Image (cartoon, rainbow, N blue to C red; front, side):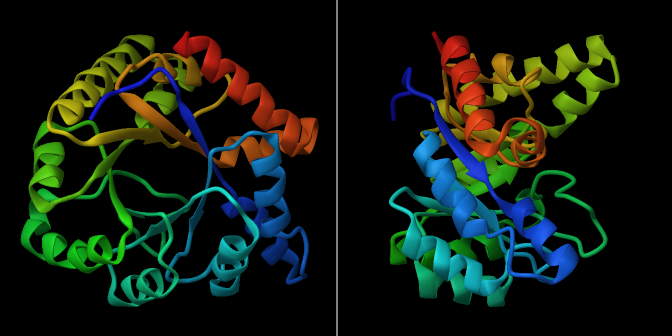
Length: 249
């Protein structure tokens, strides 16, 4: 598998649904956000169907798949319920993430090492149905090697710690985390895994991640939806795409 110059952008639209659900209304519509993202140059749409349905709901998944012409990346916990939904809809990709009911957002990478056998069994029917299976991981060698062993095709490196350290102005620790991300992207690529990255990326923090040659896709959501309040969603995506492309060049 070759790492290329082209860097894909997946836009996570979860928090359009968060705003909708805050009022219990039918708007703003995540499907409309998906279509605007597609028109603005997104290469894919990401949506996380959580156990408690705090933002995206079941009908959103069906409606998004029907509406868009670009791939859907379906983020999900490794539960029987979510596996059944994924097998029913057969999205282009499924990204297995850790999920705790009390967390505000995904707090870390999946612990593949702890549950390697069960995860290998869990993802087999998803792969057989034609879904590309991605595992959301911290920049940790043991986890990446375990993801390769269980048959995942993709790893998505968790960039949240790097971004948090940047905004906390802990630059030495931030640089150390960036070095770990760089090394683990290279390792994952050497194992034949496709490398994605995401979580917490902003206009300020995206460029060093976009520069990593092994990374072929960034998934960005909360920042883009927040920035759309000020710029508009189309303009926020276009600006992010420009920064990504400039960094990759």
